[in-house]
Each structure stands twice: as structure tokens, then as C-alpha cells.
Amino acid sequence: MQRPNDTSTIERSVKVETHRQPMPPRERLERIFAVEHLDALYGGKPAIKDVSMDVYKNLVTAIIGPSGCGKSTFIRCLNRMNDLIPSFSQTGSIRYHGQDITDPGVDPVAVRRNIGMVFQRPNPFPKSIQDNVAWGLKVLGLKDNLDERVERALTQAALWDEVKDRLKASALSLSGGQQQRLCIARAIAVEPDVVLMDEPASALDPIATAAIEQLMHSLKSEYTFVIVTHNMQQAARVADMTAFFSISRGEEGQRWGELVEYDATEKIFTAPSDKRTEDYVTGRFG
Amino acid sequence: MSTHSLTKASLRAEGLPRRRAVNRAMELVAWLAAALGVAILGVVVWSVARRGAGALNLDLLTKTPSVAFSLTPVKQGLANAFAGSLVIVGIATLMALPVGILVAIYLNEFARPSVRTAVSLTLDVLNGVPAIVIGIFVYGLLVLGHGQSGFAGSFALACIMLPLVARSTMEVLTLVPMSLREASLALGVPRWRTTLSIVLPQTIGGIVTGTVLAVARVAGETAPLLFVSSLAGTSLSWDPHHALQTVPVAIFELSESADPADHTRAWAAALVLLIFILFSSLGARWLATRTTRRLSTSR
Image 1 (cartoon, each protein chain N blue to C red):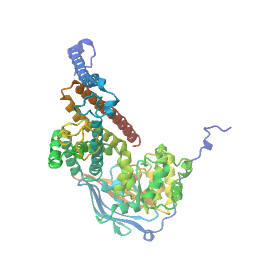
Image 2: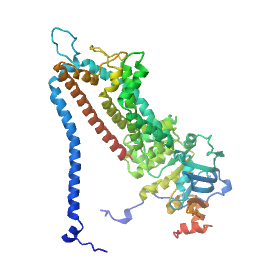
Image 3: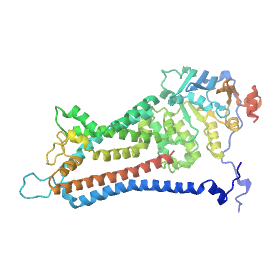
Image 4: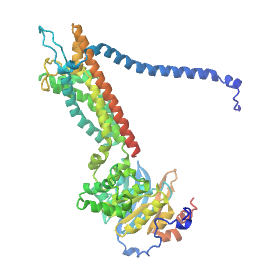
């Protein structure tokens, strides 16, 4: 008989791929986003200032930095999610495949149709597991092979095996980690071009976190991911490119976030060129 | 610095016994006030029930008042008044409900904060307008030159219901978590579709609650109906093109009658109205707690 606490039998249920393919030179990568001189303001107060960076296709791009450095503000600019906040305004440009999505003539609904988002806290609809995925498909007119699409999305989100026998059960009966994977399934089911993730694992346990990191690895050949995380190990594990944001202080006590350094993840974590990045990634943050 | 002494002498020196007595007295006064509130309702229900229970029978609900000068005294009912109230309040609900919900959706989901504040204030003012003023307004607008009608009565009651429905719908809309709207919008679903398919289904319980409370409130409104739908016959009619008798107006008219039997029937009608309002309020409260609980557990 096997003793239940025999450590040799405990295996990690999900393995995270940490060996990264060497990245092709940046000139060969296709740019999805070209952000230039982006300022984002809430009620006239800047939350981020002068951010310029490119996001490349089929890579995982991580945004790291301390709390309050504008990571979430930045990622929410990429799919016009900040439009929901009345006092929000922005200057600069965000070109998505060459088209400036900050232009008032651009329909935010069309932007979000192409650029999906997964939020910090799992937010499934109070519907069945199946309907959570199928509802968006139906509303957006992807009605052919509905069941097949639902199954594929749930499989891609590594949730299918756990829920295939209870698709009609309420999504709220799932655990937090399952709910978050359901939200990912819902987001990728409608076949977006980019998936934005705003600290998707901050409310999850390590196993669920590992599952989500694993699925980003396996899905990045089809999608482009931008992930905000305050967890540096997570960025190091999943991201090809990493952007480090930090807080700057003005003379009169104003604070805003700015992009300090943006480079290949390996470079950011092993040989950062900015002192502030080095302090942050080595834990000497001050 | 004083030390934290807990001896009796030091506590007395700080006036603790006196403060304790004041505390007890205040508690008692507050308790009495609460008891008074309950007692008033109790007395009202009891006195209406005592006087009206005698005349409360099925005939009251199913028979119309006897024709005047009838030689044989027949059992008299107020079926025409109950039918009229049903028609007028029903049409008023059909008028106020969609408009009230749309007002609430606009204010909560689409309006700028400044517009929301201004229109909410307007709704509160409308809610505070005395019913008699609404009656005069509808009288001038719809009755003068056209005559009384059930529709005019419905319109007057709808004016009273509108702010109640809109306000209660707004309250429950604010309970729907922002994250649900974001989830839908992030899929590329338009605002209107998000509101219709994701937000509104969450609020149905709350909307029903608000509507039931508004119905209970206007079912007893008398003042506006005196102007716009009171000159009605004694026969049973469901046609809102003409003036319809209603329960509150019937109570008012019967109470002015010389016949003591009419007074008893007025009490009985009042009792029916009271029972209706009590039960719909309790039902609404039950629905409201259910909705709130569901919304707070589903985040």
C-alpha cells in the first residue's frame, strides 16, 4: 500500500514549459500594436505618460511593475475598455495593424471584437457553463457548429475534461480557477486576434495559475497575448517580451506610471539596461 | 495622565452611572417610537377589519350596487369599482413600466454623471408632487373638452408610478456588478445588447418588486381619480373609454352616504384594499431579498 504522504507520488499536475524557443530578430516579427507617446488621464490626472512600445504577433508580452504604475490602465487602452470610465481621456496613438484605434471615428465594439480580454477576477455570466461560451458566439453571429466551437474553446482552455459531463450546470458552481479558464474559453471562442489578460492569475492558486500559463504557451501560435502581472516569476515563465513600468514622481507630489524598459524577457531578467529595472527584478525595489 | 482605573469610585467620579442611565432612557424612547410605528399600522388594520369584516363577502366582489329606487332590497356589491380599479391600474402599469425601465436604463447605463444627477433629481421631485396636483394636470390635459375616462385615470396614476418604477429599477441596476458588463463588452458585444441580455435579466426580480410596490401605492390613490374618472354608472363596465368607478373613489362616495349599510360597505372595500396592499408589499419584499441575495452571491 502506498502512503498518502509519500512525496515521490506527488506530481505537478500541470507542467510549465520554461525552455523558450530563441526569439527571431525583432525586424522579422510582425507588429500588432504600435503604441506611440501614449498618455492616459483620469479626470485630468495622468495615470501613464509617454508610453511607446510595439507588441508583436504570436508572442506573449508581459507588463510588469509595482502597484499603481499604470499596468492595467495601459492594457485597457489597447481595447478601448477605458471608454467606460467617463473621466478618462488619452493622447498619443495606438496603431493596431496600422489603424489608430484611439481615433474617435473607430468603433470600440469593433476593436473589442478583435481584441478580447480576461480580467483579474473571474467574471463568468450567471448562465450555464455551455452558455457562457456559446452566448458570445450566438450574439456575434458565429452560429455554425456551435457545439463544436464550444468544445474546441473549452479544450483549448484546458477545461473540457473537467466540465464535459456538466455543461448545463451553472458557471458559478465552478471553482475560481475553473471559472477563470472558462472566461479564457469564452474570450478565445469568438476567435479574437489578441487576448489581453489583466492579472489573470492573481486570485488563483498555484495549480490553476500553472494551468493558465500552460495554455498561454500552447495557444500563442494562434493568438497574441498581452498579460499584466505583478508576479515576476510568472512573467519570466510565460513571456517572450517584457515591459517594465515604474512610478515617476513630479515636483508637486504627482505620480504617474511610465515605461522604463522593454526588451526580450531574458534580457530584462538577466541583463537589464536600466538601474530601476535591475532593482525591481532583483527584489531591491526602492 | 490619568491611569486606567476601573474602581467603582473612579467610575462614579467620571459620571458613569449618570451616563448609563441616560443611555437606558434613550434606548427606551427609541424602542417606544418603534413600537408606536408598529402600533399605528396595527390599529388601522384592526379598526378597518372590525368595521368592514361584517360586509366582507363574495357578493361585495361579484355584484354591482343595486339600482336606486328598487323596491326589493337586494344584496349590494362593488364589483364595478373593483373592475374599474383593475382596468385603470392595469393600464397605468402598462404605461409606466416600460417608460420607467427605459428611463432607469438610460440614466444608469448611458447617461453622463451630470445628466444622471439632474434627471434623478427631477424624478424625485415628480415623486413628491401631490397626487391632487397630478389630478388637476391630467384634468386640464385630457378631461376638459373630452370628458372623464378610465384612460385619463390610468394616465394620472402612471404619472405617479413612473418615478417609483424608475427609481427602484435604477437601484437594482447599480447592484449589477460592473465586471459582468465588462465581460460582455470585451467580447465585442454592443452596449445595447449587453444591457438587454446580460444586465436586465439580473434585475427582473428588482423590477417586479418596484412595480408591485408602485401598484400597491396607486391602487389606493383617490385624489386624481376624483377629477378624471369618478362620474361613473353603477353597472359593471370594463371599457376605459368611459369613466370607471374605482375602489378608493367608491369608498369616498359611500362614506358620504346617508345609509349606514353603505358605511359598512365602505369599510369592507377599505379592508379589501388594505389586504391587497399588505400582501403585495410582503410579496415585493420577499422578491427583493431574493434578488439582492442572488446578486450579492453571484458577485
